Image (cartoon, rainbow, N blue to C red; front, side, top):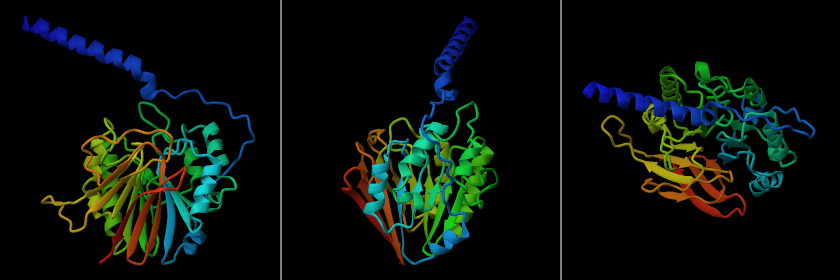
Length: 328
């Protein structure tokens, strides 16, 4: 009788799993058809930090830049121009992935059109891919053209050259992580070791890490346990970690007081979102500050020994949060 019950339970689970896969297969692994772009096509390659003349121009004691989370093609040309005009002193801007809704020509053209003549189109960008830049499948793949559009520095770990990298400024080491290309446990290990070394080699500079998936998820049901397991430890060496994906704003201060991770200064984790899509901040998220309901962006300003991060509403420019880190 026990064997029969066991068989019934096993077959029920198998049938349930097969039914779930059949229903969710397209959502998990399928790619929607590509819309037709009927306008004039723009062939554009972004100015990135893989350019000696760009880096030379940015070797100054004062550094200012904008940081944009998920956009999903939702920011208009007028909005981009407004951001550039509000902060006319910025030297570059950074984007945390999911700039495009899908990795198709249609959305690429929308991205280009949103920048034309705004002032941001003449500035270098620090960009990483998000899950929406990847093509779905049993194994997600990043189209090669993304790397052609964003010819980033080539100093990252072996399988992530051009998507995980770092940029050095006099007061800052800015590190990017491609969290969507992590398919195998060896990927997590390789990138975690590279991150740890890259942070430790930064010396006395401020360190900022940008990544698409958060280590500490702020939206219900969107936790990333493998991301936490791989990067929670190495990121204790960072000053600030920015992420997107959760479509809200939240700032969390983490004190590493565990036996093996003890650190005098905390690490600040900031989730941000520049798109129309919003998820509420979950309860008990342990945030020092949080906000959802409107798109936001960050303005980062660094002078010798001081790093200041200000968060504003995109549509009105109203400030909603600010923090400062000082080197002792």
